[in-house]
Length: 58
Image (cartoon, rainbow, N blue to C red; front, side):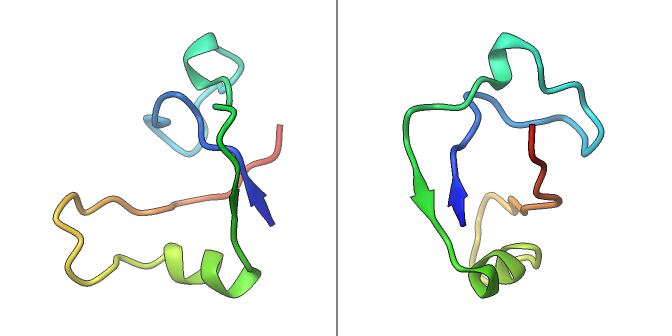
């Protein structure tokens, strides 16, 4: 799976992502399905406590 991170984090899973701030960056990150499942869990040692909460398609 390919991930194109947004320019800004979404404030909630149901946020309207059509705003300019959420446009994808040109950076592409490749993940396997298993890696994405792992990202849905809090990662030990992550000082920012960031967590993938949902994968959305435009």
